[in-house]
Length: 435
Image 1: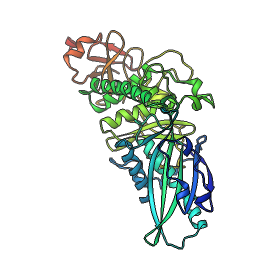
Image 2 (image 1 turned 90 degrees about the vertical axis):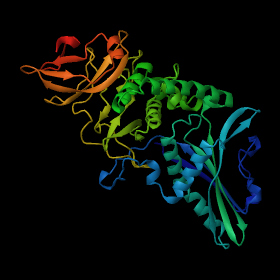
Image 3 (image 1 turned 180 degrees about the horizontal axis):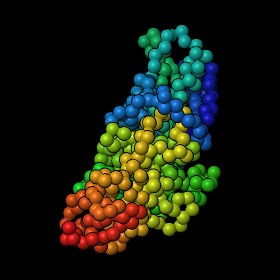
Image 4 (image 1 turned 30 degrees about the vertical axis):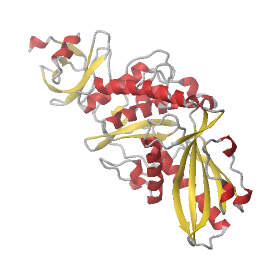
């Protein structure tokens, strides 16, 4: 989540106003010279603010709610217009030199009428004050639509007004900066085709798995296929020339390593595809996700699940230390712009979900409890994940009956579907026919 610095250029009369980038634009915003009142604003990125969440007054999230639901009516109108413009492809590229994109023209996102005797000072006060609503609406939109990888989180807007039928009609016109690596339509299309192919494969690979297993598979895949991009995270100028580490490009495509936003956006997009409630959360200079399962919200952070975060140099599987867990003590969600959901006091798996070298994952250490087991092939690739029942097996031991993995999957695994855990939860493997 970003908070931004606002710079304003209010004008006494539109006749004297020059729109700063109109000369370079093929499809620019309305001409300032044609409006009675006009003001222009630029909202730029700054560092995250650390603001603790007061859960006593937190927004109440439900199964079907999202950031959109905590917006005011004005903000919802802005969000909906922005969302519709992107979905319908009416967001236009503003180009220079024929093809190089410098910003995106979203268009008119809000209108309001005022009494005919409204003064310039009153209009300027309204135009400047509307920025916080735009910021909240656009931030909510970006958090819930990671698929629009070619835009950035900053934006510019202009506000103008005209006399219409005895009233003063005011408008808000919005443009957004381009993601540097996506400065031509050809590049955007190429990235889009590659991303769609990877996402479709991940969805297809997990289509027959339970929901929790699908999430675990994707968490594992993101760790195995990526390394945290320490150079990007530690450079204050990196984002000015290449923003791919902050987008789904880096999470899904080889050669574009992600920072936390890249991991979180990729994971949330996959959840969105199968209808699992999942939100991105920012705070303390970090971005992660929360997932709602069985009526509760759990943290799922593929960044910290990557064993090579932050200084590793080789790809490896997820640790599962931050997969469906309660609120980590070092995570401080920011409530500066959006209110994040309240996280469950306990993790989805009581003792966490940790992949060990022997391919077993931990869970509730209670008789009759459940653990989550992953099946791996001979190349150490995870084939499936599911919950299994633990039953007593001699003194201080438990037997785990694995879920109904398909025979095709079992034939690919070097390990049996049933196993025994001793007091230290070290696995003792048995062949399927032992019992």
